[in-house]
Amino acid sequence: MMPFWPLAGLLEPWWRHRARRIAGRVPMAEARFVVVDVETSGLDVRRDRLLSIGAVAVSGAAIRPAECIELILRQTEVSGHDNILVHGIAGGKQRTGVPADEAMQRFSAFVGNDTLVAYHADFDRLFLERAARDALGISPRWTWIDAAWLAPALLDHDSNSNNNGGHQRPLDSWCAALGITHVARHNALSDAFATAELLLILLERAARKRLQSVGDLQGCAEDERQLARMKPPVS
Image (cartoon, rainbow, N blue to C red; front, top):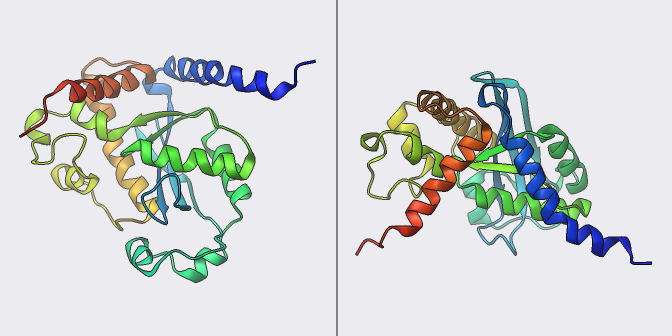
């Protein structure tokens, strides 16, 4: 008899595609979005470690402060001094954090089947997926929207004019341009709340443009990504 695990590996792309299709059908006005940000020991998604997760729910055109989660993951090795200066998670907090398996179980339960939103989402996605694989032995079937691509796609060109260009524009720049209060940069939960405020503006703009479903938002962000790839590099 063929062992189960090769079959599971073959079915994994199908399950991921099916999860995206189901999430994509949800009407935008009825969707629950989970806006997430992470802090890490560095920028290398293959080698560096996930240190903290901050997430807050958005639904019914409102941020839901009662539906938020903040997790600092327990570390056997404290990150470097320069790294700690960025995010402020001191060695004591890193050593006494939540065990990785518990943290990823709690985060997965918080997300459920809802759509994750992050700013420069590939970074957050890769760290979270690797942490889930390492701690739980699973590959999550989360669906994602990248606010860094959705913002320039939906906001007027005069709003996103910036020397860095749309998707390269840092979150701080959007916050300053749109009057979003950003309490504590490089704190995962604070960054998640700031991104959630940006998402509210994007959802309002999406409704004006007659986008109706989560899939429409995903398609809008992906179209912007593809357009950027086709543009010639600036000399």
